[in-house]
Amino acid sequence: MKDSISTQFKQRFGTDGVFYASAGRINLIGEHTDYNGGFVFPGAIDKVIMAEIKENGTDKVRVYSIDIDDYAEFGLNEEDAPKQQWARYIFGVCREVIKRGGVVKGFDSVFAGNVPLGAGLSSSAALESCYAFAINDMFNNGNIDKFELARIGQSTEHNYCGVNCGIMDQFASVFGKKDHLMRLDCRSMEFEYFPFKLDGYRLVLVDSKVKHELVDSPYNKRRQSCEHVAKELGVETLRDADMAALDSVKDKISQEDYNRAKYVIEEKQRVLDVCDALQRGDYDTVGDRMYKTHEGMSKLYEVSCEELDFLNDVARECGVTGSRIMGGGFGGCTINLVKDSLYDRFIETAIEKFNAKYGHEPQIYPVIVSDGARRVE
Ligand code: GAF
Image (cartoon, rainbow, N blue to C red; front, side, top):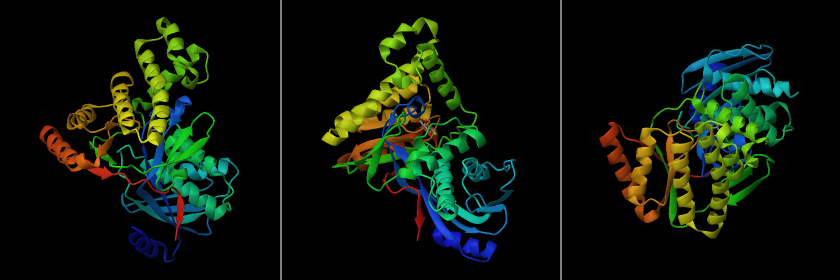
């Protein structure tokens, strides 16, 4: 990837720049808890967006995307976002840095990536944090702290891409560390690295290839439901709610909102259970909570789809320890905790059964937990 970026950069801009990369993410458990002030448990993976960048002495940003084979150009004093969605991420990051009083100078850039798009692995957060990290390193002497870099990516989603997301994806991309997951408290932003070495088990993603698009999706509506229930309960977020409180307002809210909030309240606890269980090496409990999350996301939060429910059933039938839909939902991958001894059989079965039912094979990604945003030498 680095070589093809370098070749393109030289061809287009006649010089060499500095390389940066940032990663996609997995999340072992804790979905839709981030914007509810709850806990998440993500890690960065070995699928990255990589960019070569060089200051160009103008007030313009000129970028070429190898994968999309498309070029965009925008001025740093312009308020109007470029028309291409992929370029809006970079434009948004520049604007958000400037809004915070940071420095952005005109630059040329070429980027490419291997984070599958629309698979729930957060390619957009990888792109945002790659450029936020690079701009911080090149123009701000690294003075913008890492939490702010994550918030710059999140604000880009809110203000330029129409997704009212939480902080998990950008946090994971920025703070990711090889062989570690991170338990983040999304209310206080305190976090802890957990060494992640599975003993006798593997994590693997099975991609249904059902494409999800969070822009204009019911994702924002889920968030509104949660905020509505929190307001009814008189609390800031559902982090401060429990089932007794929720039951006390049952008559005042819709069944749908009740279900959404019930899922979030239960999921909050599941993250804590999984972190404890992982430290004890109790993989059965980890797996049990993963299945419960899937059920909650499918029946209460209603962000699954037929293909992902099917993959979850196949995992259960095969005796996989834990399996669930991962990320925002509406398509993408399941994440599966599988015993070494069962791994090959599970993968074969999942491919065969899925293909027989839907006429195409799912994509398989073994998970390797890796570093997040960085300069590449
Ligand atoms: C998407 C969002 F971007 C995250 O903030 C998070 O809410 C996730 O869905 C669900 O856990 O990836």
